[in-house]
Length: 200
Ligand SMILES: [Mn+2]
Image (cartoon, rainbow, N blue to C red; front, side, top):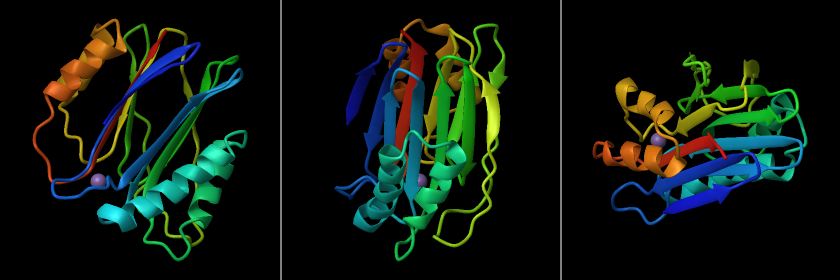
């Protein structure tokens, strides 16, 4: 499943695929731009199929419904949704479109890579573990995201070499980057979520 989002400041291409043999992808994501911010969240539910999706979707809906909150608060709200569910890993990043500062928080294996226009590459660290509904320490990192920056974010079903994801910065459009990245994906036995964001 492929989606293209054309916002005022960012363009995003998103690709999702369920693990072979499953109808439902256990990963969920959310992406949105408002007047003030750009926000993106990716969750990978524990296990696969319906139960995995149930967890990842609950976390993502908590982010979606409360996107005006800080990233720290969004992680806590998503964690609370995991009570009685399997749990999920989650990363959230929110860019203030005025200050160009991005807040990032991640628990578990969702990758974010930010490419600055000057060639700098930033890979914020996700903390190990997963959201289970139990009290969870949340850390938020602040990342500069100057105009002209790009990003990719992906769940652990996506295996891309650093040489390949570095190509993202070289392509002008999200379509070209995306075509390159999806063509290089090796076969995997996991759900796949991959998002590429570029300036408009
Ligand atoms: Mn996975």
